Image (cartoon, rainbow, N blue to C red; front, top):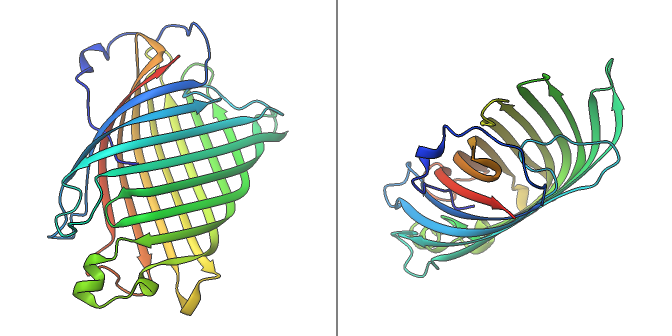
Length: 281
């Protein structure tokens, strides 16, 4: 996901969130953003914009219901400026595909307010992050969700599962400057996936604050004693514009990857900042 930066709609932020005319899951969004590897003196501050097509059965302020199927699908096309200073062959076009499936099947607790769900997801990124030529992650597991509060809402989500990850680095820099081969750079294997999601929604305005941390820890199936971990921290603010079919979404993200050897010559830590306008039809 190429992070997003803004559309000059801040003057509308004081509008109250009105009732939706419908709950259509289909939406489109316009995205703009910045990303950078601050630990690399050769990394550019990449600027880009994009268009997303979204299908979201949950929407941003709804809550999961027992025995219902929830699909959340997002496909995004981006175009970048200054994608990488040290890679002349780098394409400026990139694509993301994200697919989440969740089905609550059990309810428990004193008030029957905890939901246990089957959870599945797929994330595929093609040329969509600096240094990442291709990356995919598939996860299957269980999720636990609960909503606290009757007026303002705090939503807690925990997901634990088994995952398969495959990663291909853009190999020009480490190959030419460090002598790393493509076989060393690329990796694929299995591991554990964990995600902790927090959202707080203010009833009067509909403004939602979110914090999410996910980790994939590659433990087995990697050749030559390799390993791969990825930590991703996302902080976000969602603001309805007049109603909940029009949303302004601010995001900042931190992604850190770790390997058994130094593949790049610097810390593999990517920072992003973004803004997005989302319209539900």
